[in-house]
Each structure stands twice: as structure tokens, then as C-alpha cells.
Length: 264
Image 1 (tube, rainbow, N blue to C red):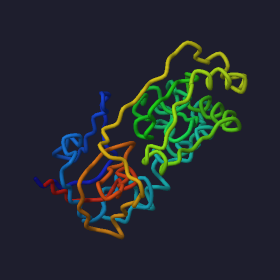
Image 2 (cartoon, one colour; image 1 turned 135 degrees about the vertical axis):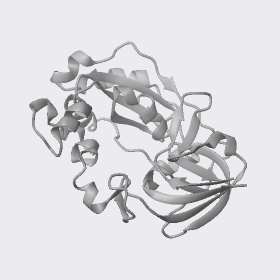
Image 3 (tube, helix red, strand yellow; image 1 turned 180 degrees about the horizontal axis):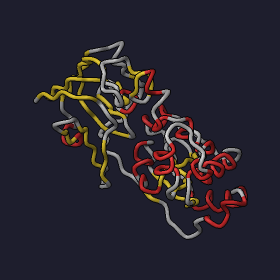
Image 4 (cartoon, rainbow, N blue to C red; image 1 turned 90 degrees about the vertical axis):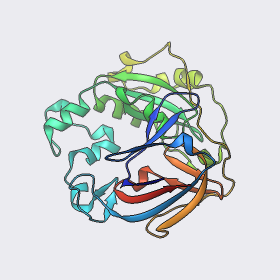
């Protein structure tokens, strides 16, 4: 079977294991059903997720011009502590920023390769954890806006990591951690403005990924350098496709790329 479309991050559904879907404009692929099958990927061109033009993707699916003007890729996305909508202060588009920033946000602990702290909108739990390849996670704080989540994350970074080792995550070099104990220990470092939002009685969420074989030596697929690739799919974890020859492909990092896919 053949498919053609613009890559965006894979959609997911909770299950044992997680169910993955690659969604194109007029079709979708249930990735779990492709395990142990040959997939061929051909790089065709670009389609910016904002302007739709065939312009080289700069970052996060956007061309250079749109990356620096679209509100959905403002600095506050990666650095929530820079959020200003709660002050009625615009960055790029105040209406959009209010819509996203002024809603419940979660500060969480996730264990992908190590225990890390992160921030996401409440509506993105547990999607955010799945995208990071976390096999376990827990909420620490639920606050009413992104700014409070951001300053909480900044405070906790001094006491716990804020990044994932993607290589260890993909090799499944992981250890279970007592996230409840982590949560309780970190409570003392939550800023005063967010202390009342601490979550004291929740449980860990465990996540199971559809992987038949983990890679031992990682080879990262870059479609600009290798425009045609074929391999046997052995698993999906985070936003990565894992192939039998230890090649891994980060779908999310290739958003905005137009590809042709052949199955079998």
C-alpha cells in the first residue's frame, strides 16, 4: 500500500500497548499494525504547517519566516515562565496566548531515561508523557495558568533533571523510580505562589509501548541526508519509529516534510 502526505507528530491512544496513528490530510495509518512489516519512506519536499508553501522547514514544522511570527512557536512554548497572558501582555497574538496560557497546566515528573520535571496543559495528559517515551509519570502540581507552571518548573530544575536522554530511552536503558517519593521530596521547593496547588494523593501512571526489539546501536534517520529509506518496523516509542537495523526516525522532528510511504 502507498500513502502520500505531510508528516505531523503521531496521534496516540491509551492502551496496552499505546496505539499510534500517522494522520495525513485524506488518510491515516495505524502504525501498530505495521510491526514486522517493511516500510519505505521517500522524502519529496516541504510543506510549512503555517503557510503551506514548499519552503525549507526551519524548526517544529515551520519555515523560517513563520517560526518567528506564529504565536504557537513563541518563546513561552519552550519556556513557560515567559508566559504573560495572565498580565494581559501580548507576545505575538494575545487572543491565542490567552486561549493556551490561561487554562489548567500540570507540572509533572516523567521517567523516560531518568526522572525529569516538565510542564504541559492538563488536556495533554498523558499525551505529553507518551510523546516523551516515559514509561511512568506522575502529576505534582495543577495550576490555573502556564506562568505558574513555568516558575514551578524553573524552581524544581535545581533539584531534578529537565531533559531526557533520548538514546537511553530508545535503548530501553531505564530503571523504575518511586515517583511518589520524588514528588513528596520536591514539595518543599515549589514556589510559594504554587504551593496551594500541590497534588498530594495521586498515583503513578504506567505506560507500555509497542516495541518488539529495542536498538543496541542507534542510527538516526535524517530525510534530507537520506531521502529514501527502507526497513522492517520493530517498534514505536515516544515519537520514534524503530527499525530492525537499529535505525530510528523521529517523526515529530520531521514535521512539515512531505513524504511517500510504501508498506510491504
